[in-house]
Each structure stands twice: as C-alpha cells, then as structure tokens.
Image (cartoon, rainbow, N blue to C red; front, side, top):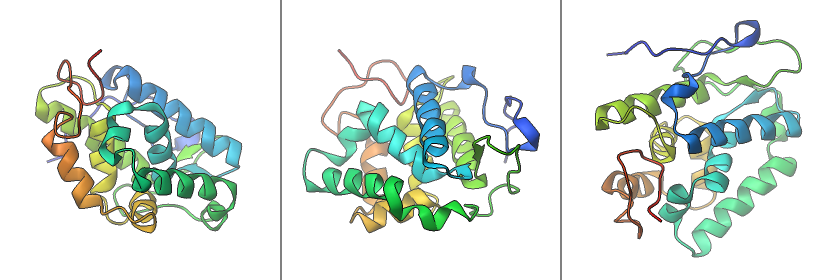
Length: 191
C-alpha cells in the first residue's frame, strides 16, 4: 500500500521529495549535504550513494552502526574515492531501481534519482509505522540498504559491508549499536 506523502514542488518536473516537516532536523541536513555533494561533483542527479555519504557525515546514529573499526574506514574511503573519480561512471547514467519514473529537471539543478526519491518515501513510511512524525537517519539508512538495486548498496558491498547485517543492527535500535536513543525519532542521540 502506498500512502500519499505531502511533496515539495520539484523544479522542471523532477521527482519530488517528502516535505521538510516530515524529516528530522538531521535528515534535512542529510538532504542538503547530498544535494551539495551532487552539485559540487557535477553529477546529473542526487543518488543513493550521495545520501549514504551524507548520512555517514551528518548522523551519529548511522555512524555507530559501522563501529570504529576498519569497516567504517573502508566505507568512508570508498565514498571519498567515488566522489573524486570512481563515480564518473555514474555521471552519465540515471540510477533507477524501478521504484519511480525517471526524474527530469532543469539543466544545472541537482535532480533526484528515482531510487533516491523512493528511499526518502520509504524512510517516511518507516517513521510513520514506528509512530514518529518525522523520518530520521536510521529510517533512511534502512530504506537505502534494503534496496538491493541502488548505488548505496553497491557502495556498501564494495566496501565489504553486508547490508542485511547493518540493517539488523539498525532495526534492533541504537542501544544495540552502543548508544541510547531519546525520543522516538530514528536519528537522535541522547546527550
């Protein structure tokens, strides 16, 4: 069942994203960071790998899922390599896992890949199912990592991360990952 989500207008007919009032403060920062990264890198679209990179930079709960060991370092190293060269193979293609129609937007505007837009919608639905009004970083991470056809999963696998294992830690909650959560929002650490 697909619940209609309030959408923000998207320039030039690009795939719209959930309205900011459906996203936690951390998630708004993640979205802004992913947009900036795509524009800076000259990519045609904001894809799921941009979202994953931004999540790792902006959301402490998502970082905790990977621990402090070599897995987290490999993942971040791979994402940096992607942004300085590896991702060039993706610049001329559209990330599409078949979830939504291909996004089309104005020239020079960072559009959202269908897979990225679908992940944002799934994050909001996951938050609602949990009884939270706003999607958080863990919601988005689970949405990304469970789409086996998206670039974020390709990045995780290339870095030696098994998405199902990390999703299981995210589903178990932040306490299982070594921290406590406050409130019900999938993206806040206790102080």
